[in-house]
Every structure is written in C-alpha cells, then in structure tokens.
Image (cartoon, rainbow, N blue to C red; front, side, top):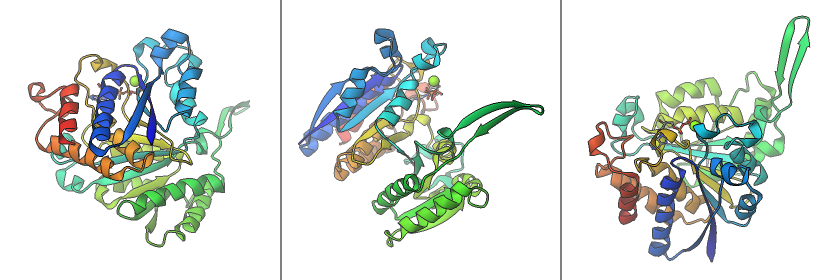
Length: 355
Ligand code: ATP
Ligand code: MG
C-alpha cells in the first residue's frame, strides 16, 4: 500500500533539512520495498507571502488526505512584526488543533561521542534514552483566561482543566509506547497541591491495570525536574500534562548535545501523525547548507514507527545516524572547530549510504 506523505518544508532551514528527510524516506522505500508518495504544501511565512495565510486551506486539506506529515520549520525575522493572525507559528497551533493531535512525543537519546557537546558530565549522560509524552491540547494553556480590575489592582486568572478522557488517552499512548521500549512509565504531576493532578494520578493508576507488564512510578514535577539532570538514564517514558511537559521536554533537550538532534511527533487517535524537528527555522544559518539534519531524519524514523508501523526501518534509520556520528562526522553545530564539519547534504548522503 502506498503511504501518502504531506511534505511542508516551511521557512529558513526548513527546506534544506526536509530535503534530507525525503532523501532518507526514498532510501528506506528502496531498501525495504515500501511505497511512499510525496506531496508538497506551503506553510508559514512563505505561505503568508504568497497567499496571505500561514496555513492555507489547500495545505490543511492535503494534510487531512495524508497518512503522515513531515514539517520543516516556520518563521523568521521577516514576519516577527506581523499581527497575531499573520504569524507563521499560528500555522502549527492550528494544524495540531485541526488534526486532533493531542500527544506530543519528544525522545532524547544520547549518541556515542555526543557527551562532549553537552554541558553535563559524561558519566551522568551515559545510557540516556528517554521519551517525553506530553499532553498537547488540554490543561492550563487552553483553560479559561481572565483579566479583572479591582480596588487592589489588576487580577489575572488561568484555569487548569483536565477531563478523565483526556488523561486516559494520553496515558494509554504512554503505556503503549513503553511496551515497545524498556517498559517503565514515569507519570509526572503535582498531586500534593493540584486537584487536576490528583485526578491525573488516579486515571493513570487505572490505565496501568491494563498494562501489568509495564512498571509505573509517580513523580512530582519539581523532583522530576531535578532527576532529569541528576540521573537521566533512570527514565524510559515520561508522561505528563501540557505545561509540565513543555518545561521538562526543553530540559531534556540539553541531554543530547545540540538542539539540532531532537525529533518530535504529534499524534492523535489513529496512526496519523505530524513529524517535525524540535528546533526552529534558524534564520541565522538558513541557505548556507550547514544545518544539522539529524532532528529531521530522526523525525522520519518516528514517522516510520508510529504512523506506518515499520519498526525495522525506523531502527535502521536510527542505527544509520548512530553509525555516521560514531564514525566522527559532524555538522557545524556539533564540531568544535568549523573546518572539520560537513554540510547538511553530505551528512544526509552518509546516513542514506549507511541505511
Ligand atoms: P523558534 O522560535 O521557532 O522556536 P528559535 O529562533 O527560538 O526558534 P531556532 O530557530 O531553533 O530557535 O534556533 C536557535 C539556535 O539554534 C540558532 O542559533 C540556530 O542557528 C541553531 N539551530 C537550530 N536548529 C539547528 C540545526 N538544525 N542545525 C544547526 N543549528 C541549529
Ligand atoms: Mg525563531
């Protein structure tokens, strides 16, 4: 069966890194006998310039008619002063919402030789291989917001709401993912203070009964923030609500050496997913052919795994990245002195060869 992939290169380094992602998918198709069709769409600043909308209807329709979306990055200084509706980033929020993508997956794994690029000590980093599963469409970011004036001055309110069903579906995702990994789930909350966290904990406990083969632990978010940099290798799957996940996943980013290494997936109920690097459009290096394509290539591996169920191919891509890095090849963000670095395209070629 042909898998339909919507490709949205976006702005800045987006087109350069997405090229490498598509290259890898083509090699995977050849190597494993899969069939992919690529259909390109515009998104972000480029779409604003051309049709006055960061997420044109035809792009949304294209995504809806696809099995998965590969996205580069959006935004840049050119559009920074635009009104809210004409901001490139608006496209991402709308896309996730329109497509019902409530689970954000951010793996952080340490590749051999990357210890030297991190600010943490090598012995702390050894064996790091974790994934943050963040609830993406509920919680305090989407609750009721209010501003009021009183005699005491201004007052602002944000509301943190979670429904049982929202917690249950993200918890199931986390347990399912853990089954394909080291079978440990750490559920992170603030149940000593927050009512929504107490509901969170009880729902996660109930879901856990369906997964007797997976070990569950609960951790308070303040403690987790500390453990993530103290003993990161302890963690396998971290599942948490929207805001805690936002903060913790950025924290885990420093475990991997460079922002250019971090992939992500946003998933809904079915197998459909949106895959993109965690980093932005990096306007400062756009057009130079020096961007690190690893985050995008690892996002492709996630697509193969989560949307298509091609686990063997996913592992082959990850292994290829591992072997190219182990052979000493680095893009400029990882190479201490620029003259040792190879470019975006060459790095992609080497990964392709390794597959
Ligand atoms: P956003 O606002 O979209 O999150 P940002 O402007 O905060 O993005 P990035 O665009 O991610 O941040 O860039 C932050 C820094 O990291 C920049 O110096 C950029 O050059 C660098 N960077 C980001 N992605 C890569 C990459 N793939 N390869 C090399 N360097 C990168
Ligand atoms: Mg930016």
